[in-house]
Image: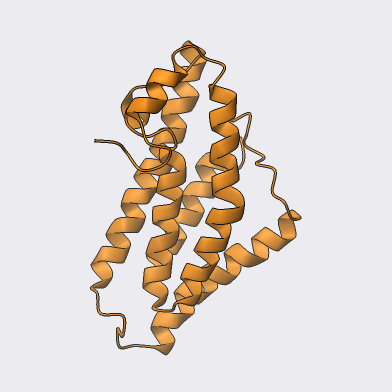
Length: 171
């Protein structure tokens, strides 16, 4: 529950769709009305909070420290990359190719995915993973493709694309 609370508080106080780190794509055009996504997100969080209580024995075969660690590292990637993008673009507009973005074009999406995987692992239920796959397929992938199309206007994007991964960092 602590991971869920930390993620919620960070989102509400830091990102909240543009209060502290405004983003041109901040209102991400969801293909369905916002109440639908709120219901899906709250359902996933509630499932993560209730399942461990209803299943006190870990039947998935892993230590819960892994799920918390993945979720916390995801929060660092997600919020850290959003902050880097915001402050870098304030001082110099253009393509960001250093820091969190050096080897990964979408560290914020990777961080968000890690947060959701941490919740799903905590829930000890396969239902959380179904929600992640659907959200990833219908929201994250189209968002990353849209962002790549937008960034392709920069002359240095082709070289940056070769040395960075869409979401997984390239070594």
